[in-house]
Image (cartoon, rainbow, N blue to C red; front, side, top):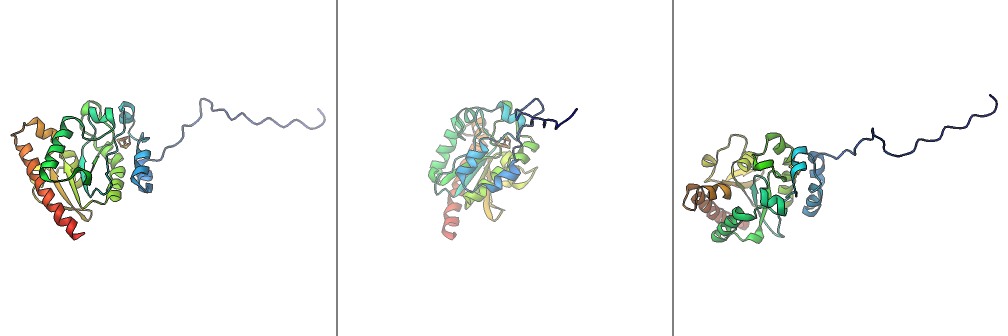
Length: 224
Ligand code: SF4
């Protein structure tokens, strides 16, 4: 054969069966780069780091942060109504929480709310430790962005998230803990309070703890 051979044509840039899905950075990489609450909300809404939770959810539930809020309530994970609406603490537990916050004198517009997990575990099962570890960077960054004078954990999962595995609410409630340079109170989740009835011990404890929280917040605000 004589003369120059034609150069091979470039391969078409059409994804084939071996094309790789784009790599999504993990929460541990992404969350610390969030500069504002709105950036974080927008980004966490696309998080798929927990495959099972991401596949089963209707909405990611990042939380709420009213302008000027300086108290952060931390719950466990979205339930069915939160998953359907994308808003934390709606439904019966939310109504009870709102009523108790109002009775304690904690104005809702100064209270931010977030969960340890942003996606609903199937059948409302307890979060797995691996899921908590994966989702934690989002909550860590929310804590930094809100910079609350007081954190209140609601329920066992949130108490363990803050104070370590094995923390018992009955032993940990009643006095403030130091948590990352701020004050933290531990109390029951409103769902537990509902389960034991309006005169049950968890409801009384939750009411008392929120009243104590309101007094403590006044003192902490005066110091800031
Ligand atoms: S639970 Fe948290 S880490 Fe897991 S997929 Fe949802 S937002 Fe991402």
